[in-house]
Length: 119
Image (cartoon, rainbow, N blue to C red; front, side):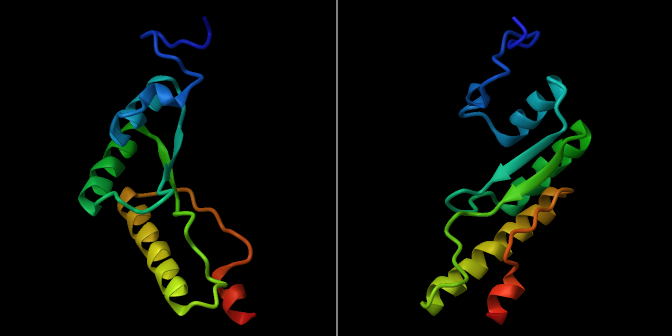
């Protein structure tokens, strides 16, 4: 039963924590010996700054490194200025929450924003 932790939780399936808070997920990861978590803002950044600060403190205490996944709805190459401005807003909000979370992991995508603007 190597796929079950000492509390009987299925370690193979992150959906075992579906409906739980991010803080509970971080504690669980620490319990099973993991040390990193990607906080996903797939559709929108709905986490409030106060929540991000609290989650960041839980992660620091549990020694869990955090990264952030910005929403998928980012298009800096659009011909529609509103789409570009909305995309920039999503990036900024993601970075603000990442900072509040105290993230330690940062991923760079290619092309970079600067490279897109230079094209």
